[in-house]
Length: 375
Image (cartoon, rainbow, N blue to C red):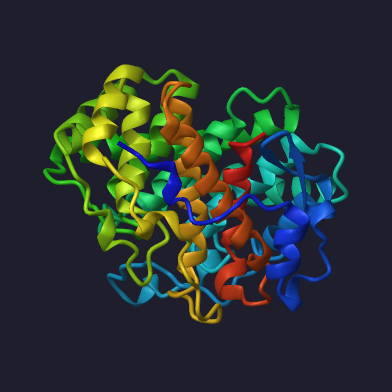
């Protein structure tokens, strides 16, 4: 049984909370500019969207600093990030560039008249050119690239493809067509790899299997890709179907930006029917320990690993919201999970624009994804 009395905080108004936690580097944005409240839900304002958009616009064509994941076979392969990845060379690393593009498209769809709309369209149009995507595919097909961005970057690429899929916007439809060869290449990698992956990766960073399958499932659902859905469901049940008593008290790790326990549950609520998921979740996480209820403490936002914990707080939130949405309305755990999710969001949002590139090149995407679940 879950005891709601263990929740160690009272609901605060957004204004009161942010006044207590807002750092000096974030003081230019007030709570009413950044977020609005619709009943019990948080919603991003256009001003907040612009604030996030600027972070991605400032980095999707910024080549350096850059952290390449690049296996070199000879001196000819010593090339610049933009030469290797003409579509996704900015924002410090390939996957952050990909989800920076996703975020900009999501914001553009939500706020089509935002002041940054033309700049968003111009930069995405340049980056997603057909010749650039062809070179990204060629890179993947070279020897030594089997594990490139597996599965974190793969998952965000499919999230980007999902966001473009079905959008009735002529320019976006062109982007979707131009991205399709890379989308197909990533799908082929899922279909090839999953039957050969004997064990899931349960880490709290990039290779986490549950996260990689979750976003791929979302794309497969949106695009009605039956083969991808089938292999994801089969793999998920094989990896996680009999898991019980997830060791949540071991979390978080010092550089986590994903929760191994929560990401697994967030995947299983996708692939199981509602009643089956409720039963599975009760066995898997019969209690919500303080290690998950309390947002992680971020002691140094200039450290690229420690600042991962800001991302952990946001990814926990999207898991809490997703799991809550899959439980019966009468289940008291749903309300509790939403409360804890909101606490994580509120304490983390003011720190996204910290003035440090270590977090600013990627955290806004996590925030926008969380808030897309509360609209």
